[in-house]
Length: 320
Image (cartoon, rainbow, N blue to C red):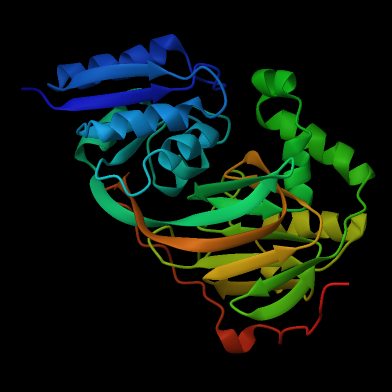
């Protein structure tokens, strides 16, 4: 009996096409695998398809799409014995870059069937969407504040045409009307304040920008940046720092290692590039939560780590 590989595809991913998914299917069949192709029909459907597929214990599940599709699929596979592989077909494909997955269909599928399988730790977030509690897992990052508001306001029609351009336009629009509220972050029991944050479970953000360069999905911890400035000039300065890789040198950027984060205040939240909901939120580590196909020759990242002694002392404060 042939080993089964299930492919879950988002047909509206920007660079996705029926032809590319069929090419992946044909490649796997040529390698001797039985394949089953499933197409999503709307938001949240990939999670349902993945959950149903994982119960039947196929040899492998492939998420074909962007980071949002991958996030949905992994949320249906948490604690499953079935490994997850990636066919990158989205706007920025951050996780594929993090794992050194090739852009080509054949390259990605070869990696899927020959790569090393590692058990990784995920982030788990509890927040709310329109006053309804939501719980989700993530493998890349959670953004709180400005970037999440920009994701919330993205025009989906423009996104289908221009991809990253839709996020840039939304970011510019939000910059003009940027009036954030103060947030309080309880990080492993210590309190800090700020106006936005990136909580990284992986090093990359928005492509190849490394906002949390020490974060690794294998490790049972987060790295987070808390941005303490609230003006438009502060925001532009942070953006320039991220592009140049110098943001961690700025005095009003806190860089912390954490296992549990509680956030109070009023702000939007995005997860792996897709909108989630609003604060308050609690973020914790889900240990050994997912089996993921890695590049078997993935280079070790250079160590770039701030010690606890280098981190500014916590600011004692309480919610108003």
